[in-house]
Image (cartoon, rainbow over all chains, first blue to last red; front, side):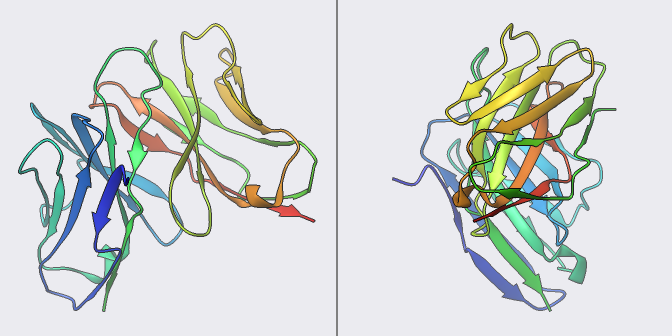
Length: 115
Length: 115
């Protein structure tokens, strides 16, 4: 049973296109995240979302937008793709509760290549 | 602003030896959490260990232990009896509790275990 899944695993597209990456978690978590890992392996938060608030990292271009149809899904839409958007995108989820490990569970990642 | 620093870009360790991966952090929050994640060459992010700032004891998970020195703001990962399968990127991360528990990441350390 996959806890956090992402589709597609690989995405190759032309500059200027619009694309989406889907993320689903079956853990019953109420908070989800998108992270970007660049070619130097550096990870950076893009968004976090629960049923009450969306928090957007201030450095994320507005070409990126998260869409959450329900608590189990947080999809990432990217408009007008640019070469610099090439990266691995990770979805993660976490149960919003006090105490515990606060662990985030990660999806397998989506490798986006913009040509 | 919160920040995570990993000063070792890469490390070579002989199999079966113990290894310490360094992580220092900077935060003004009195309550925070620190994580270590492993990323093998296959790309997935694997949770290893968590330390809360108010935890009285250093966290341990099997062969992994966290050497938490609060006054020095360090949270080093210790892997005992290293194995070839431990070869991977290792990331230290901190929770941003004011932002939906987003993770702020260090640059990572590439660990290679030699047979």
